[in-house]
Image (tube, rainbow, N blue to C red; front, side, top):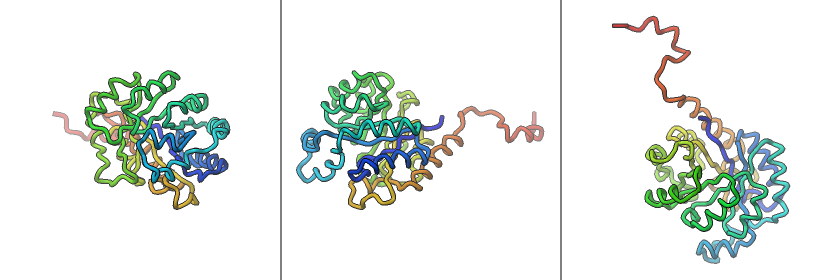
Length: 265
């Protein structure tokens, strides 16, 4: 199964709508299936909900862009054949983005906020939930309480994630979950991680990207691929899916001519 790839632009627009729309074009050219960003009506409100101190506000403020951008981003995604996703972190912001997004994505910190999940679910759109900082028992609780068909996104909430902490084996260990709802939200900034996640069982990938001239002080820059690397990341991920095949042992077309040489007892 070829992976569904979400190109996460986050705050790499550097506060400009034109750069946000350019991000949509880059995502399309790289071969992504969806473009994603994040929005909040109040950085202070998000900080309050996340129990974050004033020192965290500089990382949150870039997400507080004008809500009037939403129709333009939606239109640009539709024009390029991409789904549009936009994560929010406050209950009051869900209804603002709901008319524009094709599906919802809940960040790891809200994965066990049942009221927050239900507030998303009432809009009747597909839902994805990241699982960073959760234990296996907590993941099972999310699986049992989230709406049927919710995509569970294995994730490590470290920016960037050390390669020794990625724990892709967890994707193969979650046999209790239906394979079609397993995904991986990547914070490694390594071009091969998506391919390895697909080999481990991920059917959905979320990968951060930026523009070549995104500000080096942008809080999302450190985990983001530049356009050429994003395209390479997606190419490797799709190649991994091709190489995985269907898992059924049979004579492959490329070896049919050699069947006659096989010893038959």
